[in-house]
Each structure stands twice: as C-alpha cells, then as structure tokens.
Length: 172
Image (cartoon, rainbow, N blue to C red):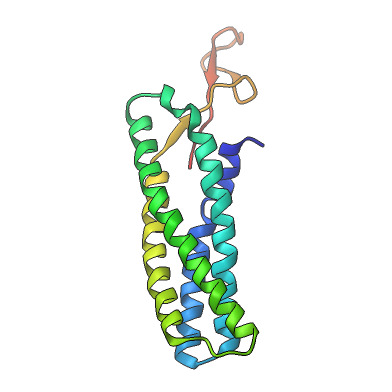
C-alpha cells in the first residue's frame, strides 16, 4: 500500500479522536468521573500517535505533487499549510494529556490547570483538524496507472471496437 492510500485511510482518525476525546473530557469534568477523564486523556494520547503517522504519510504522499499545476496543486498547498498547525496542536494536546494521565495513574489528582489547558488545546485541535480535513477533501486525484485503467466498450458500439478508457477518480 502506498503512502497516499495509507494517508487517505488514516486521515479522519485525528478529527474523530479529538471530537470523542473532547466529549469525554467535558463529560468527565462535569461528572467529576476520574475513569472517564482517564479514558479521554488516553484517547488524546492515542490520537496524537496516529496523527504522527497521518502527517508523515501526507508528507511522503505530497512529494510528487510539485509536478502538478492548477487547482489540484493549490489544494495540496492549502492542505499542507493547514496540516502543520493542526499537527502541532494535536501533539501538544497529546503530550499534556499524557502528563495528566501519568499523574492520575500515580494516584495524584489531575491538576485543574492541566485539565483546562488540555481542554483549550483539544478545542483548538478539533477546530484545526476540521479545517484541515475539509481542505484535504478538496484534493481530487486522477489515477492513470495501468492497474486502475479499465477498458470498457462504449454502449453505442456493437462490435466492441469503439472503446472508452475509464479512469478512477478518488479524493482525500
């Protein structure tokens, strides 16, 4: 599997992970439930680890994009520009969530300042992840490899000599 397909496969996990983690964190803070807060912090840590893979595969997949021009290139540049702040915000959220999770596992109280910082970072990360995902959805790639090209006869052709080439269009 090439890096572009891995990136496409993983690219919604940061958005979904941050949304679920934020919902769990808010619920845990409201109910003062340490188990829910631990689950939320653990989800932020896992999401930040997956985000490393998403960012790395996106960078690798975008290496050949400089050969493109026009709208696909502009969309890729916008996506890459949006991806770096998102990556940094999610990683910061994951690091501070890990600090809070370690404190909770050791039996110490989850510091209020840590909870508020994780909450603010999670909100910012979710907003940035939503924007990056939206911009990434604007990237459409037309595959032209021989593995994805299929030759099908045109419906008006009776003898099969008038063939059309069908190309697979996919997007992020």
